[in-house]
Image 1 (cartoon, rainbow, N blue to C red):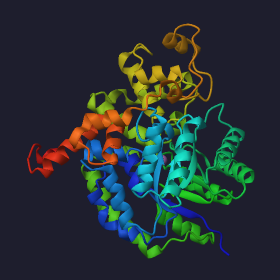
Image 2 (cartoon, protein in one colour):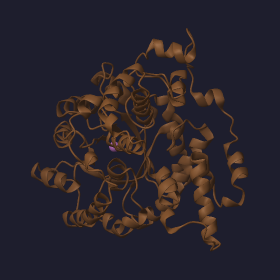
Image 3 (cartoon, rainbow, N blue to C red):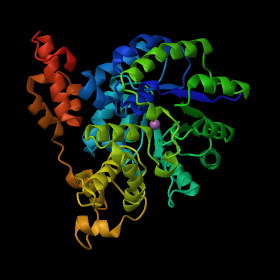
Length: 460
Ligand code: CO
């Protein structure tokens, strides 16, 4: 029997996020969903990450409604989301009851696979979400897969042995599948081979998934080596159709329907062109950039940094800011550059460059990071910076931040704040995650229902 390697299609979430800052509206892909449902993907990554924020902030869409619509159009395909553990889809840690409720609502609204990670690989931050997946799988009578995900990065402290240990821990915790998430596309073919071999021999039958990016141009080689080393599922930022073609010659069965995936490809071509023409897709984020091998900057972070510098009329500082990133990262104990750490490190690097003096201004996020509010740093942080932020000799907290600050009043507070704007638990959850954006969205929804025109067409 031919060996099987399955494919996760990422066009609706990660490609959308990495190439066009998550600005793809539902109406642009609604018509292809029922076709995608026939493709035979392992899963379609379609929700979570920045999609939630972007729906409310930029697209005037209810993210929950988007999820329900996607699931309705794709009943035969596993819908997948990316969840930042205790961060959910926001940029801070939420209380346990909020995390549990968010997972419940995600399952209730149609998610089949929840890939859970923590930016720092501090797995204490995955426990609540994992337990909630198991609990609400049962409550709703649907098998929802909890996938344990590792944020991959390279540093003197990130060795193959360390990653193998992490995988063993995730399996012990009860995750059904494992994912190595190479958000910056810096995993080389050689590294992939060593990692996947090491992990597969340590975890036996647990499916191992590789998520990588084309940023540095290595993805096709890296995936090929990962497949030779035994990986079970690959996420395609590399074109699905190309991987299908190449793997077919290896005698590997992807389970994909060729005619269908070609139709999907044809559908997205003009859409991609439309956003290139509009300037939403910056060609910089599509090109091969070997600089990322030095700076370890993921695509989403790169496109956001470009957008921020453009807003400030400071694109001339781009190269300098890029060079500052590894220095900030070292000071922070080599965190993987993934949300929210990528924004934190990126913004601090930009600030250091624009101000002209390192750490003259320190963001609240970086201060909270040093206080231990995000979890344990992978390696020792800069002692000098720690003293500057915490006061000489003071240490970060050694428990989870929710354990020290739990209030449990988020729902009551959100409900009271929204009044008759909230129609559902989903509305309240949107507000808890993104208060300002959710309020604006819910106000517009209400006004639209009352047929009162309070906004211009351009705003929609
Ligand atoms: Co990614």
